Image 1 (cartoon, rainbow, N blue to C red):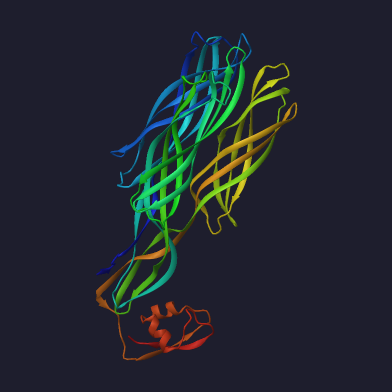
Image 2 (cartoon, rainbow, N blue to C red; image 1 turned 90 degrees about the vertical axis):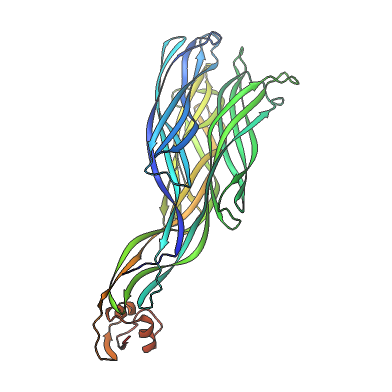
Amino acid sequence: MELNQDTRTFRTPQVIADSVAEQLADADITLPDYCPNIEKILKCTLTPKIQTRTLSGGQLQVEGFCVITVLYVDGEKKTIRCCEQNVNFSQSFSVRDTPENYVILTKTKSEYINCRALSPRRLVIHGAFSLYAKVIAAKTNTLYTSDDPTLETRKMQIRCADLKSLCQEQFTVSEEISSADKPAVESLLYSSVTAAVTECKSVTGKLMVNGEINLKMFYLTDIESGQTAKTEYIIPFSQVIDCEGAEDENRCVLDCEVLSYEIRLKNDVLSEKPMIALDAKICVTQEGFLPRDEYLITDAYSTKYCSVPSFENVKVIADTVPVSESFIEKITAKIDNCQISKLLDIYPGHITLDTSPTDDGIKACGKINMCIVALNEDEFPVFIERSFEYSHPISAADCNAMIFPSVRMSSVSYRLADDNSVELRCEMKLSGGAVNNESYRAVSGVEVNEDQPLETDDCALTLYYAAGGESLWDIAKSHKTGLDLLLAENELEESTVERPQMLLIPKI
């Protein structure tokens, strides 16, 4: 007979798929008639954008397109110009099963891009980027419990963060922004859109999320003269998300991802300057935890029959701490191949993030790729890239891992220290959730053979000489008696024998 009455459960997030695939992005670009000839290519970039993510029949399908952007110097006016082309992509990932409650996370990373000019008006581009896809589901874990009076169990108190809610919602933020107080936008050269959640309130079955979108643009204010400008907008958003299991006492960890965005210029009848229309597709993912005290049965035996316990490793999240921290990185970029007369714009390219446990908590580190657009001593446009390492300790004591880790550069200020050195001050924002992952060896069941009763004798008591430091549980188990009886008979309260002594082993 197997005594295994599983009545206590808790849930944890479980990764059921974690894959990466390389996507090619090749294009043959012929400049339209209104674009001037190419004299020099400054920079070619890949910007992948996700349109749809669907999971069905054991297959995760990700659809999107990659924006190939080429910054170049035109051959006539020696100013910066831009051309773009979209390349569609589709990728399928195998998932071992389709759970009822799951979320999908995707990330992209540009790997390489080669741009070759066949003529002043034709470009051939070969590039690739990595598409990372992860599926997370809620896993229900059962804890062994038995009410058999003949079964002795050893219990250990633990801290357990129970996953109460797991939800995800995509929505579009559409905004028309007046550019009346800014230099006119005639042609967009570069743009970036990032998003972050600033506040989240949980009520029964709902999440009320407030956040902000950061739109940055580098553009031409006058195509004829090649004059450039940069601008930045902060756009607030709010969203009510259906979230089963959400409650006010839950600790929420959020991920806010910009899947794709589109920027359009619209003529404004009330102004000579066009309106800036932004459509951003946002995805918010939430994990809600409720920490509580639990106990595990770490050993068990029968005092009446022959028994054999079985064991398993139980993985729990002991605690969760939402993380939202800012830190400053001061960087000096050396320019060796030219002299800079004017800085036009500086912005971050790709930012990597790795987290690892330390003796004091968690360390976040990675690389920042900074892009510098400037004019050299001959007033000719140049594009410069420099990579820098960063490191930041996360103030989350007793935590050893991160969920939904994310880092972004919220602002950057700079000055030209001399004609070949740029000093940067970058404000970084780190978000996610710090957790304490623990693993325990616990009993998963006990096989009790009622056909093999334990041998008994006529002795009411057994004398046992215990060594100092010996476990009373082990003594009780070896004599198949109850631990409580052993403690009471010998008037003991501790779990181990403090000094060598004679013990009375009671018979059940």
